[in-house]
Image 1 (cartoon, rainbow, N blue to C red):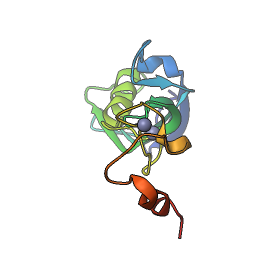
Image 2 (cartoon, protein in one colour):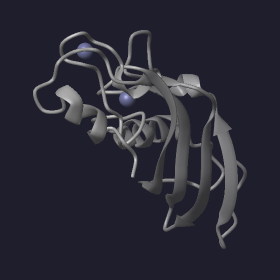
Image 3 (cartoon, rainbow, N blue to C red):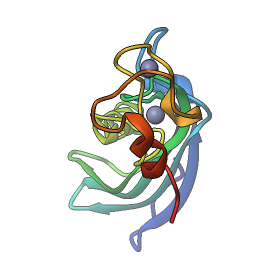
Length: 149
Ligand SMILES: [Zn+2]
Ligand SMILES: [Zn+2]
């Protein structure tokens, strides 16, 4: 990070997706670099960073288990680092990683209307109805329910 003038400094930075340390088998995987769009200010030897941190990710849908692309962002990123002397380098990688991880959805969905998997045959219902009998939408009325009006 460059030296920060008194008026503050706006800067954009990209950190490699690896900083998120999302390993094999994780529910989320980094799909590109983490973008940081930040404003830095030093007030009373405290570095204040605020802005937006966002990361493109691949996530596994909690309903249909398909992998989908998404972007998580923390637009309220705000951290302070006391005891800054002005010229020293500050490593904010850990804070950026934390901001992204805290923004991960607990229940990722490929689509709000994801239909999920059939509880009986496991078919992905987003790609069409399966042949299973379902008491709620079964029989000839099922076809009517699927009509788009
Ligand atoms: Zn889904
Ligand atoms: Zn089924």
